[in-house]
Length: 303
Image 1 (cartoon, rainbow, N blue to C red):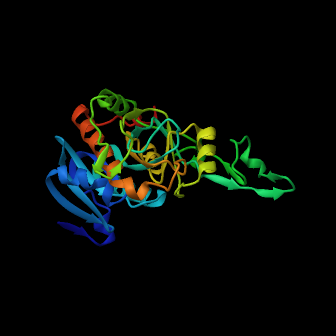
Image 2: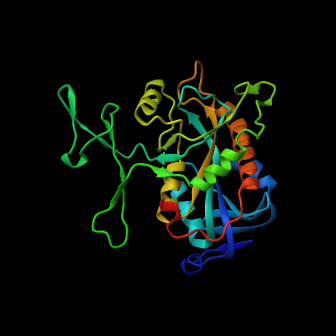
Image 3: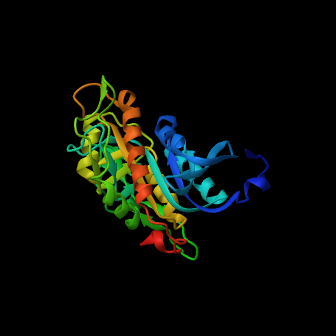
C-alpha cells in the first residue's frame, strides 16, 4: 500500500497503465465490483482509497467518491491527476423520476444535468423577480429557476454555458448491446424485492443535485421540466469533470426508490443493496463487452 502525504508527492502520477475509473458513491454501491476485482493494490491519496487492478479483463481503478456533487467532482479529478484515466464509469443507485420506471430497474442515461444550479428568486407580489442576466428560463419550481453552468476554457473571454453533459456515444452503444442480455435480480432476500421484472433502460436524461429527493410534487416538476428518467447526487458532476478533462464518461444507476413517487414509504434504505447489485451486474457485463481502445483523442469527449 502506498501512502502519499506531502503536497509534492500528491501531485505525481502513481500509475502509468491506462485505466478505466470505476466510481461509486458509498460502500453498498461498490462491494460487488470490489469483490470481483483481481490483481489489486491500494493507493491512498488525500484520504481517498483507490483500488488498482483488473475487473472483467479490463485495467481499472476503483474508488468511492463519497456522496454529493462536491465529493464526486473532487475525487474524480484526483483520479485523473494521479492515474492515466482513459474512461470514466459510475456505478450506483438513484431515484426513479420517469413514471414508467420501477425500483430495481437499471438506467443508463444518455446525458446529465446539474439541474439545481439555479437562482432562488425574489418574491414580488404574486410572482417572482429574476435578475436580468438570467435571460430565458426553464419552468421554475416556486422560487427555484434553473440555469446552465459556466465553464471557463483557455483562450476564451467568456465562459461556455452548458446545461447538458452527454455521455460517450461509443460506451452508450456498448451498454445498449448488453441491455437485453443481463439478468437482473428481483430480490436479494425473500422479503426485500423490487419490481417483478426489472430491466435495463438505455437513454434519456438524468439529473443530479445535492438534495435527496423524496417529494411527489418536486419529482413531477423534474420530470415535466427535464424529462429526466432519474435523479442522483453525483453523476452530473462527474460528467462535468470528464467533459473538462476530455475523457469519455457513462453512468449506470440502479433505482432504489421513486423519489417520492411511490405509494408508501421511501424504499431507498430497503432496496439500496438490490439496486446497487443490479447496477454492478450491468457494469460488469458492459466491461466485458467494451472493446479495447487506444488513447482517446483530445476532442473525443466534446463531440
